[in-house]
Length: 464
Image (cartoon, rainbow, N blue to C red; front, side, top):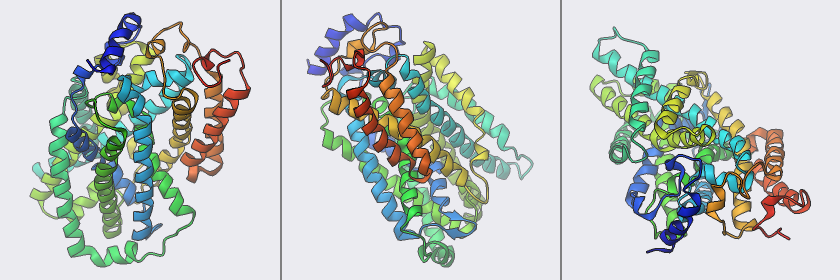
């Protein structure tokens, strides 16, 4: 029996009466079914989505590129490196103990305080859920327009139908479409390679003029885009425990870091490139509509659009359904299926069409920067708590006790989060990194010098 399994067996008697749904309990070794290869395909499937492509398209505003190709690649490489490092650091507690993100939050914020911080993860995920569904609905609408000879044209109806399908699929849990992740990641990459070829063959002059040879900037726009790239993953690596707890045990920290870096580099980098090329070639920031112009062939348009729909579903299952569902369960004590249905219904009201318009997708970028102002501070607080304050030693059973050492609210964490977010809003283009640094320093100083009798100091380096 592994050390992890032995510890869980010892803890079960202490947490079996916890008032949480079974799906929020620590995941035992025998229940971890995701292999390293599955994990790679999962993150490739997550990366090859139209949200990331739209982010690439946002480089082109009114026909002019804010960054040229070299600046874009440099910003992406820096961002992906930082993303992978933070993923590997923040996933460790979930990987070692099997607990989800909403329970990890209690370590720093307390049972009641974690409600605030978990909502700051759940709400962006629901908006992304709606956005991905809207992109998928746009692609589905393109298919139906072709099949009906133009007599059907309603993205709104497609949006509602697709959302209903996803609600049903998501009720079958984390592994419901694991095979779809693998299929989608491979086929969409092949389809995008074909689109890449078409763009180079037919639109290289426009792309060269508007993006490759653009003056761009190595100043604030460059660093702002690094923050935007990182902010795009900020909500996902914040809840890294939700994914690592599904991964089979026995994988080193360094290897897990590569399980994030390689697929994100391949998928994210390529999709961002395609998005920028599409916008430069067509002047349209909505990738689905740009696809319809570039791929002027009904059969191929149907093929590409079909896998855009599948990709939207696959991405939502990985990144945008499970985390907010866990948040809703933690707050309301709902069972998994009602919570996942509520998540889907909330995503219907996210109004994603406001974030991205044909002429520009700046709204999506601004949305990412705003919510990442809060997520950077939360990441800093979690990492400071686990690695500095507690030296990677946490009593998991205590996290599940309603009246235990983690009950109530830890004011030090809440104040540090607000201080970090406030600092981030001073320069919203650099929101994530400013919030991370300021909140980390603030949390250390507040915990050390204030609230001297706080029960949250128990088990930390500040315990008397």
